[in-house]
Image (cartoon, rainbow, N blue to C red; front, side):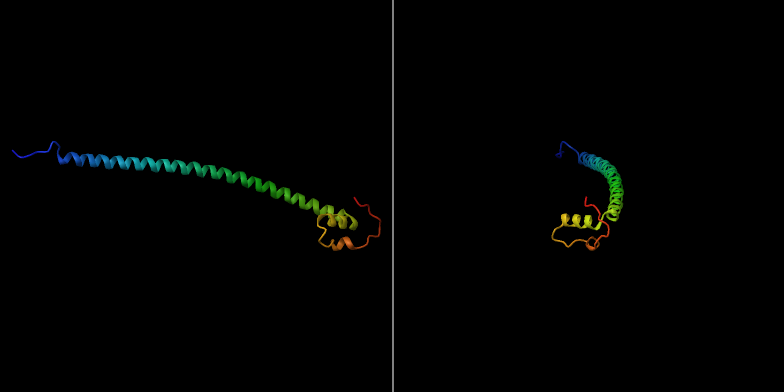
Length: 110
């Protein structure tokens, strides 16, 4: 009688197919998990972008307000005040030209 192995080759084929299906299932689960992580990250990034956009809008508005205030203060300040202010800011820089012009009325230095 011929030797017969205790298993049949078709058993391995079934196992290979089952193993292949298992690998595909694992790959699918990994892909789903990666998609979930990607979606979560994209949501978090969009949320952060919206927060940053709002902060930028607030800062631009504040900057515009401060620029208007600065312009107004410059127009209301006397040349002596401007000169004094300029000298306090940067002693090595020459004072503003408009601050060097003599003033007819005696403005107060604040």
